[in-house]
Image (cartoon, rainbow, N blue to C red; front, side, top):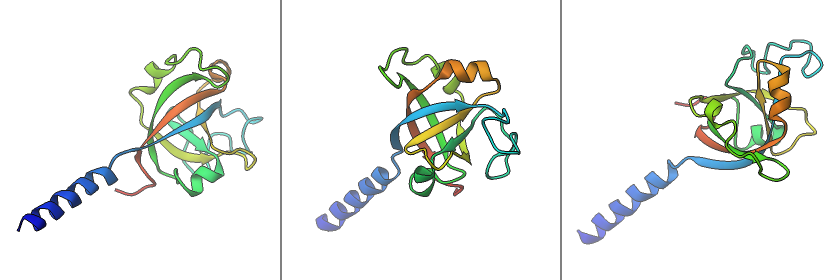
Length: 142
């Protein structure tokens, strides 16, 4: 009986561990619906969704492994890519948003996300940053 209780407790613990969110530290850039930054349909993502705040594109390597289309993530700003300076600057924008993977980056990009912004000046100010990506849901599953 003791052994059964121990096994059940162990299995319950593994179940909780398996449900823990996956966290990735990635390079992040920004894009807009400007025709020179996208293809011939600048307001439509690779999945057919319309661009809006909360849409991200991912590099194809991540799309195949960690972040398939429909994945929901939270973002934490870890600062500029080069030196980590200015960490947290974009957290007020990120904190109430659940981002969804609906777009794909150019095939030359690896281990990177691209965050959609409504205007070019904001996207340029964002620059290249390091972000913590907390996977809330992988893919379009339940």
